[in-house]
Image (cartoon, rainbow, N blue to C red; front, side):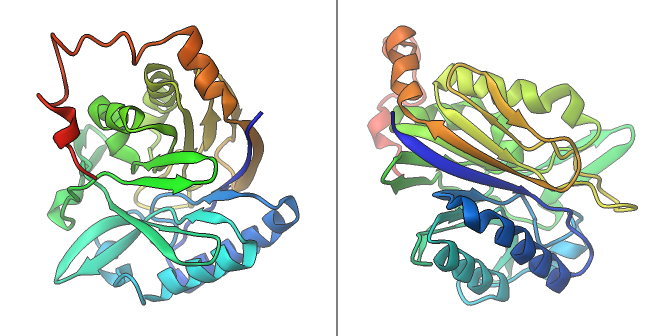
Length: 280
């Protein structure tokens, strides 16, 4: 058994950055006794999920208030920290960005959301691309427990990126996300289970809890899915924390019992004529 203790924080994100950071610190204090090895925060955990807020809450990385705050939390808890996502300002451009920290508080990876959320439902119109630029690089983090891939929310809907992570040896993929009351009930659990089954990895999903009267209502329901598609734990839409011990040997077990990756027909289809050319 290869055991990894993970914590997923489902925080209710309000309109004030300082209050959001203080609440995050308070929730982290309840994690400390569990000695988690890996902690995951939600998408836009310190910023309301709306276009008007992104430039106001945006920070440079490294050196911004939130990145320094997260580095401190990683050191204090001596854990790998996947810092949800925040709006990042870089050279007059804005990104939806995840920062990953080592247990010593060093930044070991930065991931910018590759697929931007531009949708038009009857009761929900949202266009991230009106403010944000897309990232262009996947991210795999090396840990003592194996490789962890990073996605942000809408990226989950694009199976090619998940498959790249699996082919490059990921045993787990972490997804800070903020689905909504339209897409959440229909797609949230289905997508997490499908991607876990397709790629035989653990999937971690961290969502904000909905905030009263916010223009965009998050779905909540943060969850963990195992490599066979079983939901290990799923929250409701209230502020809460998941703490779970994961047996990472289940990844290899699933891939031996059902060797999907070995059965791929690369003579017929491939993500790239030479998948080794895809560098990250």
